[in-house]
Length: 430
Ligand SMILES: Cc1ncc(COP(=O)(O)O)c(C=O)c1O
Image 1 (cartoon, rainbow, N blue to C red):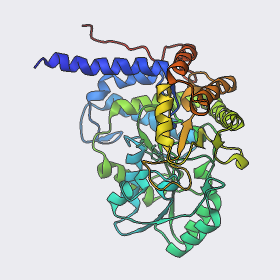
Image 2 (image 1 turned 90 degrees about the vertical axis):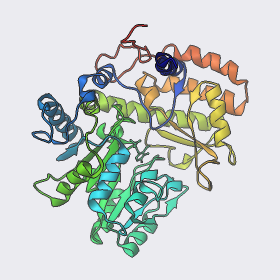
Image 3 (image 1 turned 120 degrees about the horizontal axis):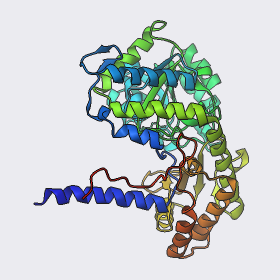
Image 4 (image 1 turned 30 degrees about the vertical axis):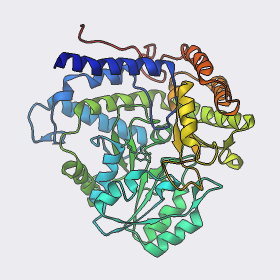
């Protein structure tokens, strides 16, 4: 066996992937693209190192520079979210959620949450981290028309169940959660309030979505690679310090030794840079994301698409959800990919099976980062119409998408924004 050939096969796939995304319109709502400075951190020596514990209190030597990096990441995260506590160690949003469940719930505890079919993430479902922790799940009702949690019904559930934790936050997240009212009731019955901001973290930091820590959340988790365009990772934020609250100390232990050992030091360095970039450009970026999402939703609607929540302004986030026909979501997503648009099939109200959904979910955060504004959203809506309404041959649309995308290869809202996002850099020459 030629092992070098095997290794080169992997490299070839990575290079092809770069080229492919250079030509495609990336519209998966949970994804984004890394800035040049963040990317640089991922190939530093930090990648090979260990740092269990917290800065200054390590189980391994050799951490003096990394300690400075982690302290800086924490300082920047606190500033970005106006929070008193930040843990930058979780290696994913799911890991952040696992740490919170580990710290604040025991097997058998009651937890209230939205059903995954109504938009909650699998980490809060029985097949995910919540199931792993063995908590008892009780679901809030969902208002299909408003595409938001049903406040009155959820208040009733919280009062009846008296949960240990009241969980909020969604993967399909068009509108802010009415958190103030719900958190108040949750606190009345002695529950702690957890807000999963995975998708909307960058919008919250940019002041363009709700502010959960000011609306009653005791803790907020998030992913650092969606609307907050950093490395794949997670974060935990709260508005009390370890010294002020034993619950916060427990969160620390939830992360380590709860669900991490070493925590991918290179990704913490990249996170620190992403936080600095978001402090510098996040407001402007978040504002343009929401403008783009609203404009694309409205344009699609006016072209005849069944965009959800039309009576409520379609969206207040980076996401759009539209229905394509009974169980036709998968088929539509494949057609879009053939035409050069990457999106995902998604359940819409009334769907029963996640593998046979009737909708398409879109996110505009990555297109926005590539410099697109309202005018570009109109061009993109026309591509959708050609593929899904006019049933034009995918190959023909694909050619136009490639031509269109040529002008959007640079990353914006970051330091050194002139760089080509898709250039494949070979460190080892063949
Ligand atoms: C609401 C929500 N929470 C958590 C996650 C998990 O994030 P990660 O992929 O960082 O583990 C997601 C993923 O999309 C999500 O939508």
